[in-house]
Length: 338
Image (cartoon, rainbow, N blue to C red; front, side):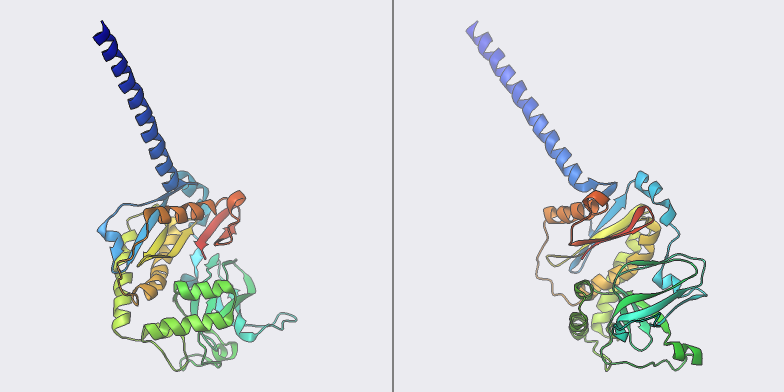
């Protein structure tokens, strides 16, 4: 009888322990899911070789169907590189509308006579004019509008127009004829500081490391053919095509040799797909000049950045100064880690 009582008590204890363990496991699973799935966004954490190349690893971010439906109106927004091919869209040296005492190199004039709405992103680099520039902030150019925009110079050694194939009218306006890419993380960080000197220093640093210094000290000197450019191009080719089949991808987190160098979200997959190559080009500028020291970033650190990025999409929780959010209409269009 005593033995029977003992075995019954033992069985009860085991059942209670199992229940507690199952509950604990369930709580852990729920916590992990909460870290990876937030505000209609999901971090893809799979350890797959296709997301690692050299010193850089990417973590894609996808959107749930409900979020995609809410952001459907953003699907046809044009990006700056596309807009510069449109009839009626022009960027020129700044024209003064009224009184303006700011430095000439910190402003450009944008004319959008097209029928398209155009998203211009902080970090977009345009070439031409009296010197190449990088855009200072996210903004939208509506159809049939003209406005001045804030920029920083990324070509320290030129201050006059040079384009042998330009028309007389283009020379007179100081027209820009090319889109380069999204600037590297270090140059974008300097842009976010709002300091022209810091931008010039960042450009000088990345072009020196890339063996791409030029007489005019331009960021676009990175196109100079050499071993570093070839290495950077390999990064771009490797990663860009990976997103083509991901119809719900809206962003990514980029890690390079132990550091998170970029975290970006776009309001619709169409916008992300048309921005991803230019983004990866910027990240690859750093990756191509980084020696593999075996440093890693923990999954927890990546999840934390994802949580902050996703949280910044909600208006009531979007006040983290380390993250920037740009809204268009009633929805967010672009969120990124500064």
